[in-house]
Structure formats: C-alpha cells, structure tokens
Image 1 (tube, rainbow, N blue to C red):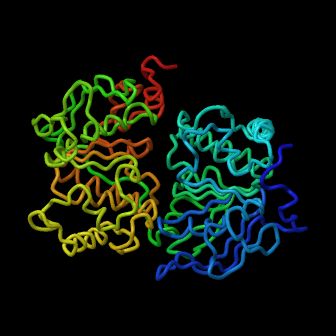
Image 2 (image 1 turned 90 degrees about the horizontal axis):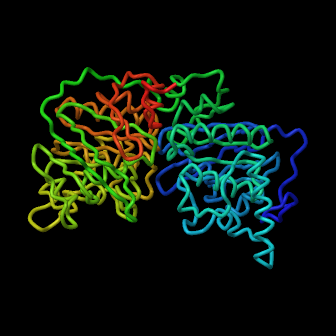
Image 3 (image 1 turned 135 degrees about the vertical axis):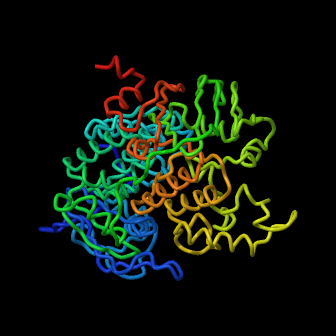
Length: 525
C-alpha cells in the first residue's frame, strides 16, 4: 500500500456505536454583516449519500467549507465519527478523513493525472519511488471504484467528466472516508452526470460517506438517501429522500410554491432577425469546430441548440457574438452584415443590437476582482446611462446597478461588493441582468442556468420567455435537454460541428438522443 499524506493511524478511531460520520451542532459563521450560517445542525449517517439543497447564497458551500477547514466557525461544534474536533485547515480535514471536490476543479492543467494526484502528498524522499507507489495505488483505486482514467494523460487533454474523476481520485488517494461534492454536475453532460451517480453509489457500497451539494432536484431524488434543505443561512429541515418530492423540496428551499415547468404561450414569430450562413470556425491549432452551419432566428421565437458539450456549440456562440472571427461564412443582424475585423468585433455586434450571455461566466462574463456595479456595466460602460461624454459617473452606474439588483433579485444587495464574493448563481444573475436589461434585438444565451438554484431557474426562464414575447429573437444553447425542450420553439441538434437535424421540442427522448449521437432517428434502432 502506498504511503498517503494521510494514514489511517492519523484519523480518529470510529467511536463505538457512533451512527454519524459527521455531526454539526449549532454551527454559525458571519462575514461582516452577512450571516452565512446560523445555528446549523446537520447529522450525516455513515455509508450514505446525503444531499444538501438550497438557493444560491443559502450557505451550503460556506457550511461545507467550514467542515473542510477553509473557514473556521464562529461558534458551534463539529463531531467526526463520534469525536469532537476543531478543524484547523484542509490538511487537518484530510487527516480526519474528509475530502472535498470543488465546483471549480483545482488541477494543474499541464501536469499529468498522476502528477496532480501526488502533488503535495509525495510521502517519499525519492520522487521516483513515490511516483511508482502512487501509480500502483491509483490503479487499485480506479479499479475498486470504477474511476478509470489514464494516469499519464495531461489534464488539459481530458474532458470535464474525466477531470472530475481525477479530483475524486485525489481525495481518495489522500484517505478520504467522507467525500464532499459541491455542485458536481454543473459542468457535466447528462451522460457524464449519470456516470458520476454510478460512481457515487459504488463509493457508498464500498463504505464511503458522500455529501452532495446540488440545486438539481432530479439528482437529489435519483441518488441520495437523505436530504437537508437550507434557506438564507439556516437549516429548514432534513427528510428521507423516499418520503419527499421535488415540489416539496422546492417549496422548502424557496419558502413558496415554485413552478417546476415553463409556463408559455405559443410563439408568434415575425421577421428574420439573425441569419447565419455557411459559418465555419476552427480552433487555435486549425481543427474545424463549426462546419458550414446555416440557420436563422426570427423575432419572437426561441431557437434552441441541443447537443453533447464539445460539438461546436461554444465556438458557434463565440463567432456570432464577435468574440472570435469565423473562418468562412457570414452573420447578419436585421439584414446588416456583421464585419468581423479588428479587435472590437464584439463591441460592433453589441451596437447592432445583439446581447450575449456567455457559457462560462467566470472566464468570459465577469471580472471577479471588480465590484458588482463595475461588472454590471462591463462592455456597455460608454453608454449615456453611465455618464456623459467620455466621463464615467460611478454614482449613475451604481444607481443603475442597484436597480438591476432589485429587478433580478441579486443577493447580497450590495453593488460595492466584489463579484468574487457572490455565489455562482448570483454571479450568473449579474451577467443576465447586464445583457437582458437593455434595448436589444437578439439575445444569444449559453447555459443560462448552469450552477443556478431552482428558484433562480424559474426566474431566469420567465425573463427569457418575456423577451421572446416582446419580439426579441433568442438563440439558446444548453446541455440541459429538459431546459432546451421547455424553452425552445424550434430545436437544432449539433453533432461534430454540424447541424444534423431540426426537431420540435416535443420530439421523443429517443429522437433527441440518437440525433445528439449523430444518428438519424429514422435509421436508428
């Protein structure tokens, strides 16, 4: 057996008769005036999958960060396997057998899988000896838990689902018996999410305890044994999953009844607003990602693009929005040709009436070191609404930001707070408010509800439908097939960079599944 950074001898012995792997009692944590956690009680049974749900900003991630040693609680107790502990930092948490897989992976992109797993846990004077033992242990873990991944592959060459496997292996390699997963399917395709659930069930069968933080009620109902609901920093309740329903959980999360379906009337499309003709896009090394794509979107309709992530949807959106120039083809807005020349193409496209909500809010939608009000005007800072002439007025800009904070229910309601301090869902609302609350003709949206809670999903869907009904042309990309089918009036399916078919939203799951795999539904078995 390889020498872990953490050994079983360092971990507390399991108290005889202790039912719970984790037991938090009256845990509280505040950040200045914001009470993130208030008198939280949470008991997690050993060898179970325990879900934690709540709106964005409910305090779920803060609570788990306390358990993992990122934060220190202001008050309360933490019991691990029946023993009272004070967790100093994440290294101490690992010594206690607690590992965490974060929403945004913490991997070195130009290192191999093996190098990432051993990083910080070498445990040998001679690195070669340590690497050999780690390779042997990694092979055992991969076999035991169905976490197959090439140990010599570079992280940058892996899919998102494979990167997540590496994070789980890294925690197991360090001796984790309790594994915390924070929004683990937020960046996964439905197929990858199903694979993850099978892995979690295998981990439970092998004696591990899983804490699953998610806002997706389908996942909670599918994979957990018990679920706890948080709202505004407090614990609302804990129930056996088999004794509840998505509707009951949603009401507990939000404090009111939530519509779990999209309520919309039939579209009334008018003139073509967005035209894409023969568009082709290559990546940085010349590999074709979008291949001769043509379609149009009319005023007053939502056209969805369905497909497994990585089939050209991202590159298509970036090209249409002016973020990267296409190799071939043309884009027209209200009949006017978009000229992709110079570094200001995205600004030109915005001036033509197109707004863009990018797929990755962190990399492309926000500057997280900026305050909320600065992000609220990003890309539109030369508008008269934010000043006069060449001079920006912080007072006017902050007033506009405050108005949008109220309109889009962004929490905390503080435009002077750095955007890095907002939850993922509230960061998404900042981007959506900036792009949707303006005079526009076309809205292109990538993954509008990625990492967003159930109440915010209802809110975002409602606003997208309202824009459609006002005569805006909407192009929607989402890996959530249910979302595509619920919002779209027409659906285009992309596979390997091409539009392979057009389907109605009420087409069967079989037809969608075959099309997304590049198989003609008429020919599929």
